[in-house]
Length: 168
Image 1: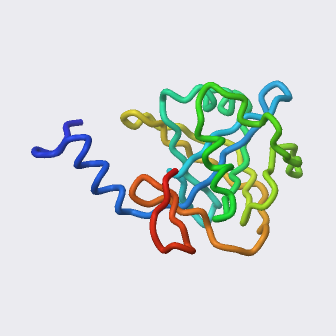
Image 2 (image 1 turned 135 degrees about the vertical axis):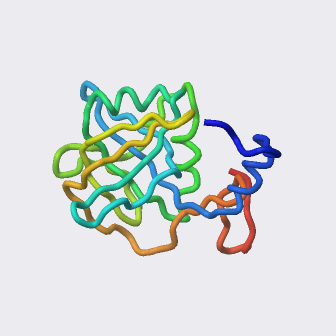
Image 3 (image 1 turned 45 degrees about the vertical axis):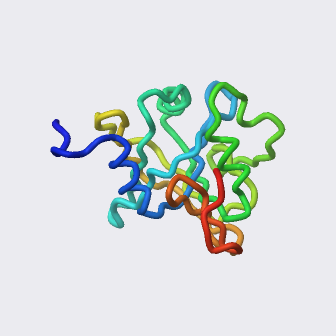
């Protein structure tokens, strides 16, 4: 694959940063230990069968642990969960240290205060540049607390109160 003439990484980020995305935390259990990472590259893929798509970076050290488990939970963050989004985006730390969670029906870690959650199993992985496209089949789901979604726009979390982006 080649990139279009006249584009560079800075321009690419500037243009795609103008597309607002929701923020999720993907969680699982690896040998009984909860693991997870912040993921904004997430979307619904199919209604029948119910499939979702997520795209972890190939440099992720967490994705191989979730892949090994074969099961995952998608925690859809609310605008009150900025710190959770930040925490699970950090590298080189125990993201679950001091974090409350409860098990989904099949035991996947669910974070409190989310707008909704999905419990899935991985059905396919596709190599795509510096990310992996993961297709997952939805096994269970539920809505959570009412509220606004945590949104990511122009490299920052969107602040509903200020109507502007605030630093992630």
